[in-house]
Image: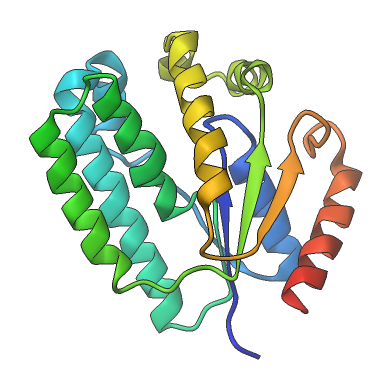
Length: 205
């Protein structure tokens, strides 16, 4: 069987990593996580977004590209808890539009992103975790990362608006949507079984 790649997408706090871990385990796929704990710019960014935006986004982009290439070259069945497309279309764009990233930084970033797009394999499935801002805030409070708790609500709303527009245009793979207001596998672990069965059917596993 050819290897399969599943990527998750959705706002910060939507539950992507929890779902990716559970679904990856059920399918026997290796799970690749966003580089958060070891990202040297993340905490600096939350305290001074203007100064560290470009550094943060570049680090995320390079780390994610490397992970995708590893899965592709080693023919791994893989799950990624965030897609590379969001790096440019959501996070970098939001930083540029809100004045946190300068035009020349954003343009340079997009040049890197566009170059990488020529050399990566697109996923077999994108799982979009659709969560409204109230759900996002509730889950951010639940996991308790102080640097996220200090971020203004307007920031999460801006990301939410970008996600709504982006997912309408996404066309690199089939999309499987999870309504995060109804699905919470932390509170309701049994919900994972239906999700996994749906994904197996889509990918013909």
